[in-house]
Image (cartoon, rainbow, N blue to C red; front, side, top):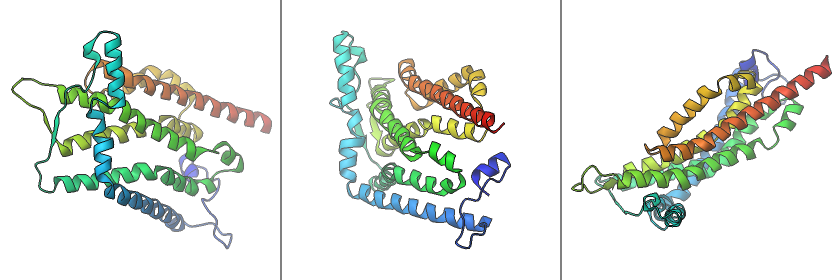
Length: 288
């Protein structure tokens, strides 16, 4: 039974046909899925080994970069602050120290960075393996409409990663790195705490930017409609604002900056849902 068939209650087509031409059993489907997962996992491992070897470069020039004053985002905010004669707009002007107090802290951090870096690097291949699994379950017309699915899914994820890295991470490091309840307290951030915060924001932003793809899939199988999305638009905006508040520093300025793209992604999902319904109506008219 195909994934689409399970969701709609109708068996359209099996996921894949064996050489004998007979329908595959449920266990054969699981076996097919297992090999896709194995190949995707192998790609992650290979990329993770690469990231483990070049961990020092990744740490110094990528993960630690957003907290430095010469980072591109920080320089942009500094230029705006100077242009508007408002020093408060400048971010990450006060450096803070990253420390490690666990004996195996740097080694375990290296492993975590390698694993997360392996996922990010191999994401295009992971999406491609997933697409290879579900592609046989689609009709020919659906395959044509889904052309470029891997490209769009990967592009949205990497756009979200860049958005989180170049905008949310600098704002977060500035807020928490410079926040003080007393001048007697000096900020010395734990290595694991810093890396966890940065990587969670980056991966979280990548996943959030897949919102149009999720809406497209749910609309395709008939679980939601454009009317539903429009009727509950205000509720969705509130949820998006809460989500923006979770992944950003607790200040209104950062929350508004992040919530803007999330709202645009939601509206893109509404547009895609309308297109799916229009094509579905056109097909029903032709078949009538």
